[in-house]
Length: 216
Image 1: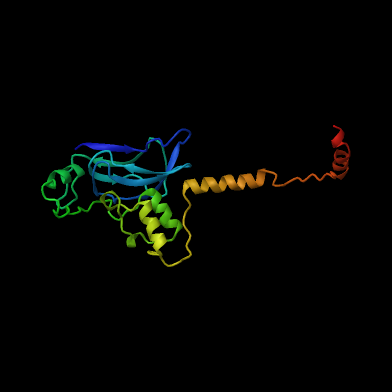
Image 2: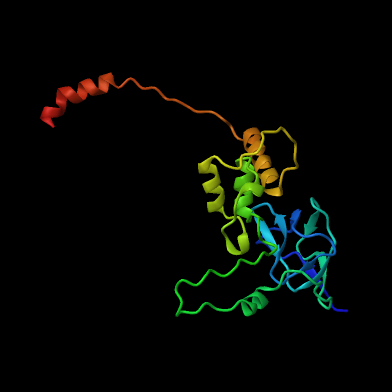
C-alpha cells in the first residue's frame, strides 16, 4: 500500500498556521488528482487545497481546527483502485469523448459529464453567495465542470433569483474576519479618534492686501 501524506502548504510569508474552513470530500471518498478537497482560511485569504494524487482519502483534521503550515491534514491511498461508477479523470474523459468532425457544422454538442465540481461554488463565488444570502442549489454553474463562478452569482443577484429565507444564526468567524475585527478594535482603543480645527480671522489680512496690492 502506498500512502501519500497531504501537508498544509505555505500560503505566504509570516503565516504559520491556517484554519480548516470546509472539507469538500468525506472521509473514505475516492478523490482525483488536482480535485479541490478543502478550503483553508489564513489571516490574509481563503485558499483551496487540491489533491496531489488520486486515491482514497483519510481526513486527519476537523473543520475549525487550527493546523500549522507543513502539518499533515489527510492521507491519500494512491494504491487503492477506483470504485466502479466513480467519475473519471479529465484525461480519461477527453479520451473517451469523440472529437467533433469539422465537416458537419450542425453536429449535436457533446454531452456534459458531471464531476465533483458541478454545483460547487468557487471561493470567491461562495463569499458572494454568503454576503447576498443566496442558495447555491438554485444557481446554475457555467464554469469548468459546472462550477459556480462569480459571474453566475452576479447574474442571480441581478435577476433577483435564488434568494434564501432571511434567518438569524450565529456562526464561527473565519481567521481572516477575526483578524480584521481584532485590528479594528485595536485601532479604536489605541488611536486618538479626534479632529482638530484651527480658526483664524483673515479679515485684517485681506484688508491689507486690498490696500497695498496696487502698489506692489
